[in-house]
Length: 374
Ligand SMILES: CC(=O)SCCNC(=O)CCNC(=O)[C@H](O)C(C)(C)COP(=O)(O)OP(=O)(O)OC[C@H]1O[C@@H](n2cnc3c(N)ncnc32)[C@H](O)[C@@H]1OP(=O)(O)O
Ligand SMILES: O=C([O-])CC(=O)C(=O)O
Image (tube, rainbow, N blue to C red):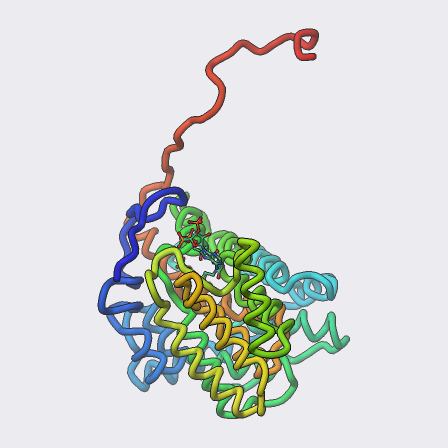
């Protein structure tokens, strides 16, 4: 069933063209350059999907090997960026750290002209996990980690830096799946932010910095952290149901549910849910996964609201012992590919994005003198 899209928030209005993805088109769910996200999550590594989104085609073996080697070679943080990260306090939000890290990188290794757009994007793709983990480990553990590891994947690199140990196969696989699911999603709020910025002919780091700010909010990427904050308070499925019923009665928003475009399901949910279930079995969980399933059942039964991509990401990341405040930064590590591809697409056929507003203010009036202002 297609959702009727209209009303505030530019809902349902075509704001530009894209060849990168389709969202909620009947029968296809979510596609990246014509490939079903389910197929991609099943058969690909994240680096293959990053190559697809950024370079326009799935890499052959030789292209993949050389792309991974290139990304591996770009993992070292510039000294000046390390200095900045070391000054950010431990109680900062890692999304703010990433926003600053991205912006600082733009000062140190800026995009001189658009011919560098692929290069600066690859550098960010390689470096964002390093930025997050360098700051996290320094501010929380007092350790200056080496970010230039030989890990074979972006997700593996991230987990290795975070824990100090190479991840097992299951965790590395889940990171591939998660990063693939989060990579691209048409004109969502953060991508639209990036495109608006690109439409002024601004540089790539400015576009990505703005997009990080948009993704941070709990109505968008921040929902995976907000969902975790909620479910970790529930001690059993029955407790979850009672609390959820109360929240619905009080008309509270429940994070990780609903979607601006999808009508009755988010195709990414069943995929990450399956992996969350596998991780639950792996760690012997008997609470968080059943709690999450009950939340899903209650929301559907009571409101016909379904889990979006964020909801089961919360339990999946938790089972991998990833701290909650790093959930949305992982989304950034992935969505960077979609953002940058949209910036490039906007640049290739650009007109400044400048919609109109319906004026609801005062009629024309004279400026009163000071004495007249009361
Ligand atoms: C990766 C992502 O960014 S996915 C989105 C992540 N965000 C969240 O999970 C936050 C929670 N969800 C929401 O706030 C919303 O569903 C959004 C922001 C995703 C979409 O917003 P909209 O397009 O305005 O939602 P939609 O038009 O479908 O809402 C219909 C009704 O359901 C309600 N509703 C929608 N989602 C929820 C929810 N999660 N909890 C409670 N009620 C909800 C709305 O308040 C609205 O009620 P109303 O008609 O009485 O005002
Ligand atoms: O499309 C949206 O509005 C939000 C979303 O699911 C995403 O960005 O992945």
